[in-house]
Length: 163
Image (cartoon, rainbow, N blue to C red; front, side, top):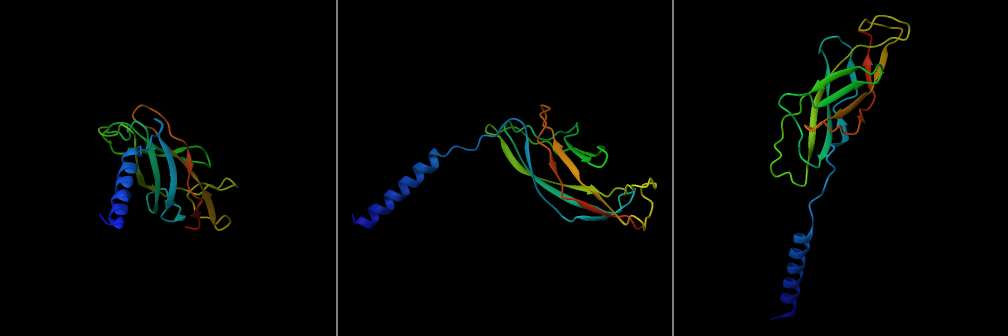
C-alpha cells in the first residue's frame, strides 16, 4: 500500500479512538445559569403590560430535572425593593437520557414596571422632575428537587417615567 494511504488510515483510526474516549460533560445536580442577553434595555413605565423585553440565559443541570407542570421554577426579583416581581414555570423536561445532565437555553419575557421616585411621588405617575428610573433584576431557577441555581442579573433597564 502507498505510504499516503497508510497515513490516512492511521489518522482516521486515531480520530475514531479519540472520539470514543471523550467523556460527555458532567454537571452538578444544582442548576447553573449564565446570563446571555436581553432584547433591549429601555422600557416605558406602566402598571399594565404595555411594554416588555426578552431575557435569555443558558443552563446546565446534572440530573436533568428541569421544569415543572405544577410548580414555579423561575424567579425574577426587582433589586430596587426585593419584590419577586415575576414567577414563571419552565416547561417540564424529561429526565430520560439525561444521565450526564442536560444543558440548554431559556428565553422569557419581562413586562415593564413602575418608576419609583426618591421624593415619595406615587409610582407609575408621570414625572418630568425624575424622567427615568433604573431597574436591575436578579434571576434564579429551581429544579424539581428544589435545588436553587446561582443568581444572575440583568443589565440595567432604563424606565421612561415621563408618561
